[in-house]
Image (cartoon, rainbow, N blue to C red; front, side, top):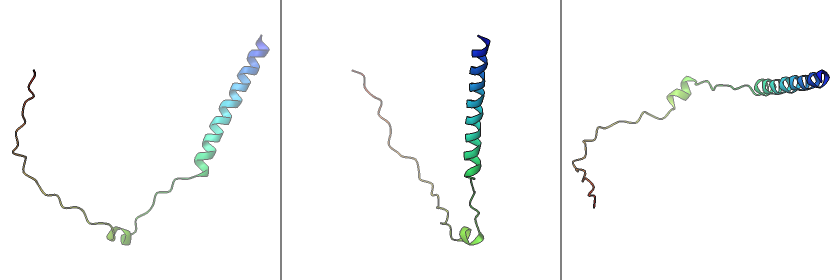
Length: 67
């Protein structure tokens, strides 16, 4: 009985280490690189949109009629 428990525990340990190893291998194999903005790229960016205040609507809400 103890021998079977030992092998199950060993198998679980191997599987968990393999899963963690594969996860770290993927994260280190494809490093995420943030793009750097040069002053030229910033100057060529689209201008900020102008925000205009619109007056509130003058329409009044009609309450629903329950029949």
